[in-house]
Length: 235
Image (cartoon, rainbow, N blue to C red; front, top):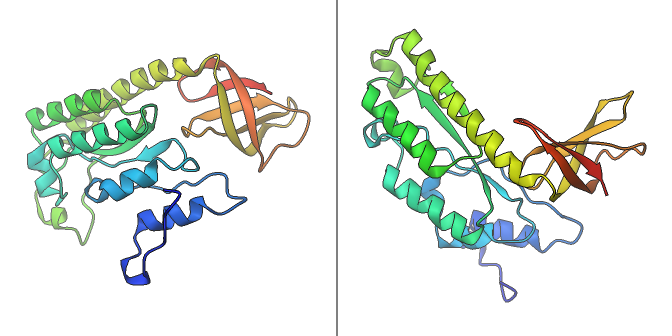
């Protein structure tokens, strides 16, 4: 990687862009919103290992059923997705992974949904953005019958939501006693001078400071782990 040389413009990839940015002095964190699993190749895996890339990746799976993935026009299978997750964790064993999942997609049976639950457990996601399907004009799915009843969509959503909350709370416990590097974004309590920002794992961290810390990267020792936030003391 130290011998990296930027390719010609016509061959320049997103991974090359990350490699280039990583070499810029003054940039301490690199974060991108999301990546389609089909684009995770060896070049991308090498880029994910860069020290300035935050320790979080959003990898949208949408469903744990190959049948539903095909209907969604997703270019991977469940098996391929899990192999990608395995490769990512070999590069970064402690990386936090987020995902998107839609329940109640047209044609989704109970068996399809249970496959999604199993995939969630296997992938052991840190966070998920869960949605109940609703027709969106202009999409192929909008032409299909919205055949999963609303109450059934709610039931499936709640099962995944409960699973996610259980895993989030469990996973957050490992940060207690550790030091988190936090990019401070806001002051959430002006009277108590409580500031908040995200760790490199994209975990919300709150701490007290009498000095304005907004925009700074600080070290925070985590004393308490809740479901949606970590609380600690600035070092």
